[in-house]
Image 1 (cartoon, rainbow, N blue to C red):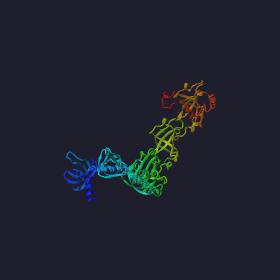
Image 2: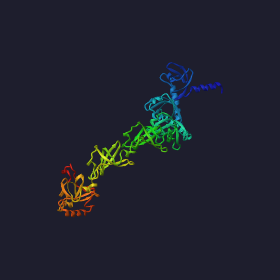
Image 3: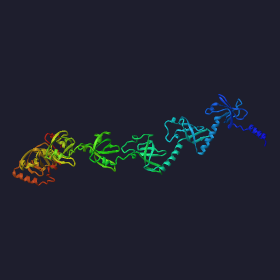
Image 4: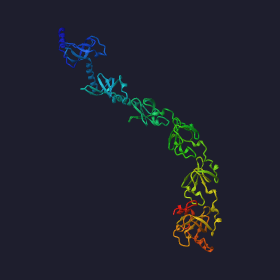
Length: 566
């Protein structure tokens, strides 16, 4: 083939070139004007492209470029071309291929819009806010202008829409980093991480693709109420690996393990009985926790706050952050517990209690409280003595101390007994006087005619108050010559009566009286005494202690007899 023939074929080929609208063709820049750039694509007329499409490029006449043939001829007879649309079509085709291949595409964030970011990846694409990062960002504008790699998650060819995800790229990178981390790390290794999230129970630390849990109990040797007291989001931490679970991909971290354990040699620093100073960190119903040094706390039990005061709640006498002094009572290194006491700073007032209040001595005190079984008398600040109801009177059966005592009044009493172990002092009022029953047989003899007032009435008889609060019992059989069915038919509380003493029993502390024998002669009196002695003590003639329990009416001098029970 001759050269002229080949030139002819080339000319024919160029003349009959397939100019299809929508195709990308090569063109040559003919001229560069202020508004347009003229481009020759070998067609019968050239095309004009706006200068704005060449904004980011330096061009010269004669440069070859690829353009999109939009229209072969417009109203002016010119070819309609676009350089941008040619690039867009080429980029779109590349994006579609990357999408189908599952690859990544690089792009620059152009702007923040509602719900996400607009990204230029050769063509415009949308990055939803939820796909920007693992943790959705609060401010989208910080991403504008930055270049990232993205995964294409959705393409709409008809609408030319592209949806991207940066989060999937990060998650994939983190998964690879996590696997690498789990393969190389071991317990006791020390690593660096960034605080990612803070919860009530601990902190999640980003170790570079791997999240580790730093539990609140492993953050400090001292007591903390919340992790935020020690760390903040974004803070860089040096931590120690405590445990690695490769199957579950979990890593446990420790911060306090980076420091020396303050409980080492604790006995040497705080021997038992030594004084310590500390700050109260927590108050609970059973005591107060005191920090004696960073990471070391002791407990003052509520019972160790005072020798004498009745403290029911530590918060009544102590406050959070208060600095106090205490004494070391015991140490349990294994359980990391120190028992402290405050009362040990002062001598125990019970140690020499018998010196200040000897048994048998008289004391004066104020009645602090009354109970069903006795009265509490304050001897000194925090030390009470107790008068049992049975020690109020030698002769009277007192059912409740309020019958003879009042709260707040001062009284005199005798120290009966001291129990140092249980910290109890027993007092008595009746012991201030001699027992009238000890000389009873010298004051009352069988046959004596006595007078008194009816103090109590029972089903089996009536109690008559004689001298010095001593009661005598008139049995129902000794009320009258006539048969008596009910005592109250014959007597009532407060009545003045005259009777004969027919029995004096010093041991049983009882005096038997007879109203019907008031006018008997000696022979008749002996006969009645014998009959009285024949009564069974357990039923018909009981001791005063028991008899008063069954009394239905009660009266004492100064009481209106009309108000007694009937």
